Length: 167
Length: 406
Image 1 (cartoon, rainbow over the protein chains, first blue to last red):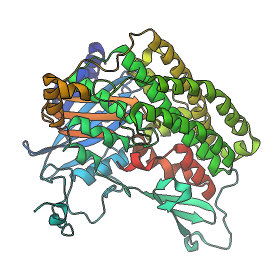
Image 2 (tube, chains in turn green, red):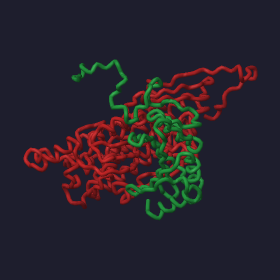
Image 3 (cartoon, rainbow over the protein chains, first blue to last red):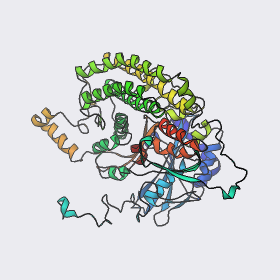
Image 4 (cartoon, rainbow over the protein chains, first blue to last red):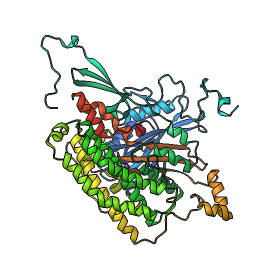
């Protein structure tokens, strides 16, 4: 995305939600905006309906765990197929209680992506029609993509390490 | 599809009506993978369905957080295993974007050849299997010969067939051998005849058309709302193709058409893939011509710190040995940053969202898997249709279990 197009997108955001913006950055020429969590759905709706924005395609949505900040970020990446601009929006939620409203009211595609994010990070998407685990088993008690969980499942008792040449 | 309104019997009150439940999958030949669909049926008509995924979940995103960059390539093989080279290339390009490596033109064209061959292989599987599911086995056997030839080309390039691990960060691991070029040229020469034979069997076949037209349709609006991409979105009439919209690997220099459908039904999806195969073939031909004009023998960018040196050099040259050691031990410096890179995979926009904190492994890596995103529209697409239509709708969507579950 070119610089002018990025400024235009920032302008669209600032039109109504200037007080919600925490940080604007363009790593590798990709507009990334950190926002406060309360009004994130309104902001995405604003981008969706804005006549010059038309960000009407949800490319992806995922969680990111920052153990040092004790925060979990939810990243939304929306794409405007009319102007071919992409923007990445991030909200930061407290690790202890990550709650954010659901995006399924705007994009049907958000349904499974949010379930996956819940499954991996335990982010609660308020108002989601069917918020349950999607890839992992239902009776899993941890949120495995959080950084405190090492690659091998420490809660398993059926694996005898000595059989694998380890103590 | 025409008279699929649920039969209403005047004697049965709606609240007394009972539905039957049917498990389609998890292991069933008609589902092409391990997916379960619990179908709520009224006779043979589907009232609702509840898909369950995750049977081959392998935690790739977690695995990727413990592996050096070059060891993530074999993981990407296993996403969409029908076109693993595209996944490999997409991952290499993501890392190259992060590292800021400039790739020589010749290598880019070689990659285009590999990626388009992979797209052909992917679409061959999808389209022949639509034929198979509608009862036409012949076409399946005709074209699988050509897919076998593509796999032989992979073998010449990298030694593997299905999970290819083609290429390295910075380019390819070796130049195409003369035998490989022979095979590519022979493939390009032989493919049209075989493919025409297949097209004649199905494209205007009355039985096939009656079976697939209006089967599992989706409107452009719903498809966009569900973030469809690739042939399935184009079949609904939206001309979004990453190769044209955000060109990578010099796709902007190639001349190709993006076919679009109108109804988004099984027949349109089939036809879009058919036309894309002709376009892929044309791109391969163009790339072969372009390579002839580039300096011969270049198969990688000059980035010894990221690209494993040839074995003879490792044994005889100190610097090469140092680089080899550093790469294998994962001690190369990478910048901090966030990158998103997408390529047009066999099924749509395959994206890699990579966050690097400067360490030897990614801090976070997310795969945007097109299948995972569009498969959630499946219940909506088969609602009100017959069970047998559900089967061919699934095969025409080309749902790949590896990409679905990651």
